[in-house]
Length: 322
Ligand SMILES: O=C(O)[C@H](O)CO
Image (cartoon, rainbow, N blue to C red; front, side, top):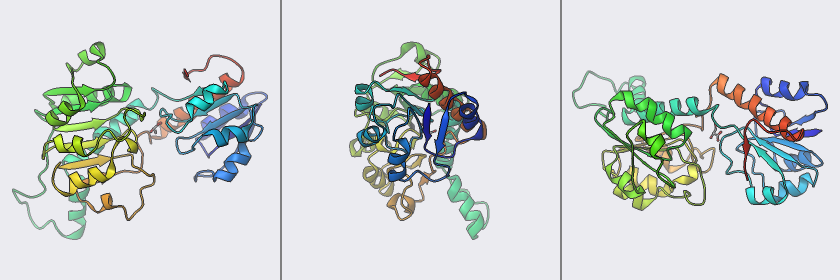
């Protein structure tokens, strides 16, 4: 069973593959993404593919792999990088890694929210550059969670975990939006299902944790930011393409909203001369939501187990049902 692994992954994951009898692993053994030509060559004739969210697995890759490709296992919960229609047509099974990164991503979402609303990177910079001259009553003020309304776009696993962590900060009300109401899930937070624009209007903090789909692409746009309060903070830890970044830039630059925290952007990496990086009220992280040692190791092991199960024709620990 020949498989191609598109990157250096935590050793625990690779061990699962190498210890499995009959699995021949070819790997792009680098921290950097596999060049497209190497991906196309590497996948040729393989039965399994273990990939990452930064690998675009489209018709070209599937054609290069040939009809022997039976399983794709992505080391991610997101699967917007996979051409699912085409994959389904070819009868290829897909594994992914939900649940195991929920806690780490929710924790990072909270950290990013606090960094943005309490202006932490700006404050650290002031300490370093001599801007801290004395304690000043009006200096470096931001917005707190106490008594606030938090709007969650996508009350899935990660959205719920974010709400659970924010609740003890004294949040007064949770709103959420998504494809349909989830009364049982929302009950834990007494969260109210509202249309997107009402969420924008009433939230002091908006946290985006939904999947990227055709329905959510570009959803946070000029209209959306235009409805938000001037004192509100926007946080995105899902996918950059849910946001229209030009519109977000305008909203931040013109004081339409107070601040933003982004762990995801379009493109990734964001070019260092991107206008968003010139804004003091925009905190940008390099897609590190799931980046704890333990989480990445568990993701790698799960991705390897999904791949092996698929190759053996067994039920996968986490299969994406196409
Ligand atoms: O899709 C995922 O797995 C996250 O975005 C990265 O951890």
